[in-house]
Picture 1 (cartoon, rainbow, N blue to C red):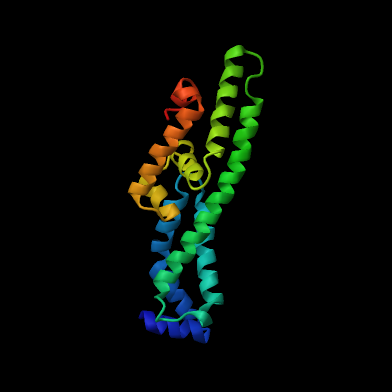
Picture 2 (tube, rainbow, N blue to C red):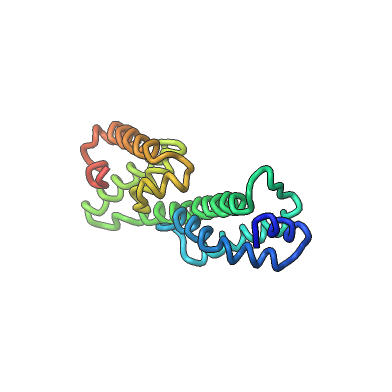
Length: 188
């Protein structure tokens, strides 16, 4: 089925056109969702993003206009935005978990207490960076995503991501006593 036939069928409410779109674009949408959610989400999160994109396609089929873009493009944008939203939701949940872990650290021994203090300092400094630097640093060093994956997720060039990482690391070093303790500990 061609793109034009698919669009016409979707606008007419033909479920076979939706099935054709699913068969044609599922692998592509999965790869986009996987790129955004690689180190943060589960397979279920990715599946939900892809399914949501197809549901939105079905619901908004009447609004689609072939002069403004193809179904493929519309679906790619839809799944990417849903995956980014899902990533942010997961990051917020994990952030609370990380803060709770940091608060519960240091239950007794001096070294554990100092580690927890340094970790809290580092976390506070990261939060002070602002967006998108904060998200880039968390993705790079907490979720261990590569700059290429971060650039896809945040719609930035790889060079922009690398430059922001470099500048954010400099800011963190300056905030953390010239990089003498916590920045070294976290390989920043």
